[in-house]
Image (tube, rainbow, N blue to C red; front, side, top):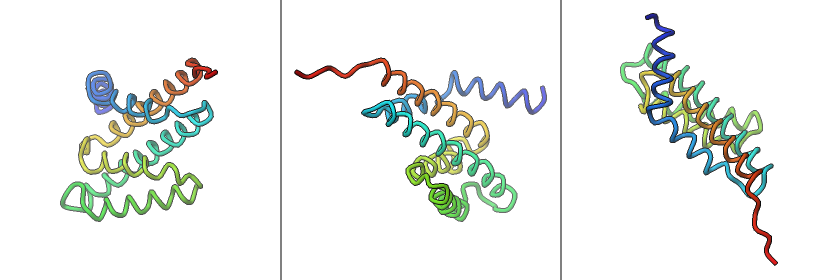
Length: 147
């Protein structure tokens, strides 16, 4: 097997047998809002945050591994957090700042530092599934009418 096959097998194993479904469950609960529009907006914010945090964690973990002696170096964490908050503000998505930073820190500090790309994909995929479930629930479950 080559590197790509190992990554695919690892992703499938981690997603179906690992902790990744917890990200989908958390996203489903958090994205469930009062209105469908609110769920969609919150879901988009979470997905954007997961993507940005995952990309930054993947890139900075490679920088960290090549230039610093320790993994999860404080400088890389601080620089990443500042950079991500700045990016979210610059693209006018301040509401995505918290999930972006959380995703970044989860990956860079060590929940799955050895495989940041897989962790980023799992996190984003789980968020997409969870946000989709919350939108479906919001569309199908009607609030009771109070008389």
